[in-house]
Image (cartoon, rainbow, N blue to C red):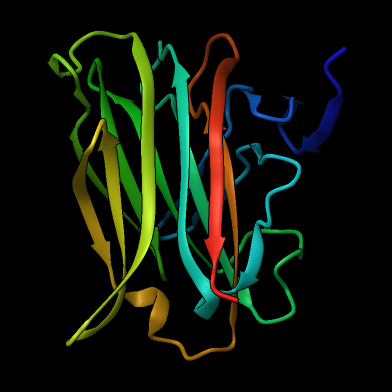
Length: 218
């Protein structure tokens, strides 16, 4: 029997998350999202989950990388899933409520096509999109096969940043470099989870996840 875990009730929805040791499923009800846009939109209602044994929160300066693979069939504009990194002041990694800063990356259904979407939310959310790479090229239909996203800390002669990639076989396809997370000193903590969201209407969105992993420095 698959254990039932993380039954969340948040305002407009109830999200059911089922887990096994290696794979888990997130079901997102309509009206769920992660998005911050002026003058007043500030939403962080999407259900999240992780593998039970994963260490998902730690000091930001200990972060090395995070990755997850996922699969779903989008039907409605903005159906989405992937990985989310929530940043909070030190001591508040397990706090409830909307994190002051966060990053999400994965697949988002936009203008009838699944696309790789990355959002960086420092003060407000900025969104970038790119084609989904597959073994046969770029995705052009609704069905999405297993897709892997990787977020990795990068250090060079200019400073520190996070790089976001789609991993397609042996290839890392760069999606975005995000610099601001390391611009606020060492007093921040990070929590990493998988997520699914359905900002629009229609049937709930079910997403399968596997190979969730987060790496931290000792």
